[in-house]
Image 1 (cartoon, rainbow, N blue to C red):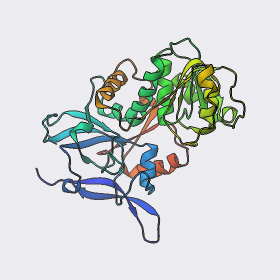
Image 2 (image 1 turned 30 degrees about the vertical axis):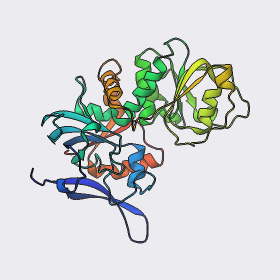
Image 3 (image 1 turned 180 degrees about the vertical axis):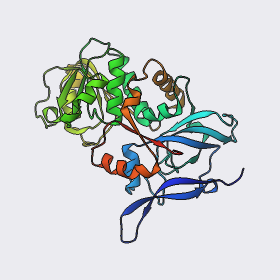
Length: 332
């Protein structure tokens, strides 16, 4: 097909060290190999995108680079034959936006194995209000719901104002669970309560290292997005047979624990890997997110910006000052 010119946010190294981002013109011929060319309508901002934009070589090895681990749009062409032109699709995680040109460009080209059909019940915009954060939240909720019934006790969500945290609060509340939201932002309490949190826990209350191997039994389950002492204390405070879903390490990747919560209370610590989540299971979670798990507050949880508004939001998310979700309108 014809070589198309499009707009993209590009991160690049600058003389003397450091990185900067700029909106540039690119061509579809410059995109990597792959069976599916997608015209991206919407993307979303995630912490990993901000790290890539800031030059984190642990996320992105080579620059210049277009971040964006999420994308939703229409298929332009698919040489594999899996998707018809015009089909609405979602592409999240795998290597998109890390070392493969990502959703902060108006076009992407990716392997067909990375592409999921947009489920009925979600618009492209709503899909990116969820994005990888929503997929990750859905995976956490799925593992908790397999073993913990509503009414068993509170489900605690750490980093509750972030993308994964806020969506987890909304989904769990919709499913009838009592939700305790952990945040370091007291002013965010009304926002979290609007999502369905029935209890707000100050981060300082649960974030200090605790030497005791077990704490008072408190939580029937958990979605932890931060790791470190908060995750340690959640595990130590878990009720018998609780399920703790771990999906982030913003505070620390280290855990200082004994085995006592696991062998004396039967607590399960479940790791969540949304990047390489198998496609059949991925589609099943997206179907839930489009139907019975779809947050009723979705529109109020997200702010929409264009490419030109991304740099400010990248700075905020790196400082831990972003609340809810940021959706990127690639053509707005």
